[in-house]
Length: 82
Image (cartoon, rainbow, N blue to C red):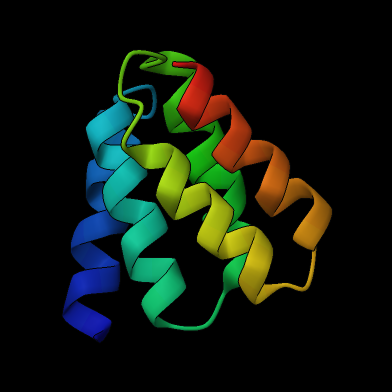
């Protein structure tokens, strides 16, 4: 885990606006239980790559995990619209 965090930190320094790197940051932080930080990274990735509609499911899951069911439902609605 420490090695993954160190490599992720380096990647974020090199490519702070790369949606794939931000998505990776989301996955690592989610696995570590850092849900709020994971959500922020995922939302940034989605803004940079709006055509990646599959990420809506991940975002809905984060909202559900943090108890924000209204946002989870709204996010699924956005996926359906896309």
